[in-house]
Length: 366
Image 1 (cartoon, rainbow, N blue to C red):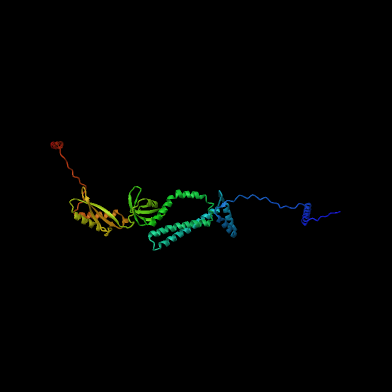
Image 2: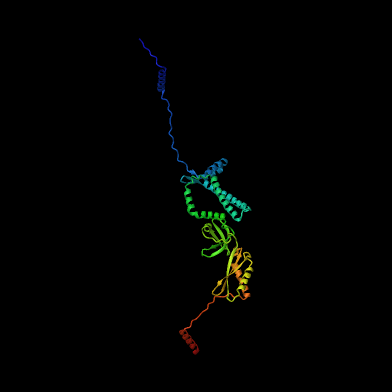
């Protein structure tokens, strides 16, 4: 008796697949994909400081092989600083761009100054302030444009930031302080070109001078002897300054004078008024003033006070003109200007009388 069993279809399919696999194994091994080893990544190339140089070299090489070859040679001559690669082409490109940017900035600065001077609604101080601000803006913009044209990777130059910060903090501290001080002086108009101020030289001598210009670092003051003083802007901010023409150019001058006790004081007063009115630089308004100041050891002391409007023309010479006219008028009217006098009172004594008698007898006998 024969027994037969029917296998499920899935089992039959599995046996067929197994048989086919066995046949393939007999014919030969199935080819397996070969995984090639990944080559090690080469070291990263040095960072190009001037990215624009590569683009320039490629663009020129497409147009001219000769010029392109020259640029290739210039680019081949290079040196490295850490991760930075600087070629001769980079240096030449930097110099060219710097010259072009500086020329353009200089021309733009001259043009802006010319335009600012034509603005009629600005006074001289506002024009000067506008010129300084426009100069700073133009040069800052020129710097940024130069960086952009060169394609400089600022992150690659980040290591210069520390040194640059120290330079500003220590070496350029006074420079930036003077720059800010100059701008503040122009904004509050406490000191402006044309003002007359008192300056002190290194010997401690005070002189009066007129401000010629206010620069980025210092102001220029010219005295009557044509000596030009350069005073840092910061000094004018922290030190006391005498500005003779801050709110008004009118300056009062005081001239002391003494006459003898025998003089007619009323006549002296009239002559002093006449003397000061005869000098052209003296103002009629405010009016001059003659004051009796006191009775001195040798003279009756007067003080003549008058006003001028041009202190930049000198203070000593106006006093000289007034004194000269006073001398002439006093001579005409016999007014005496006394010299110092002393009255000596001698107290006699017995010893003094004996001494005088001895001296007299000696002179008689001789």
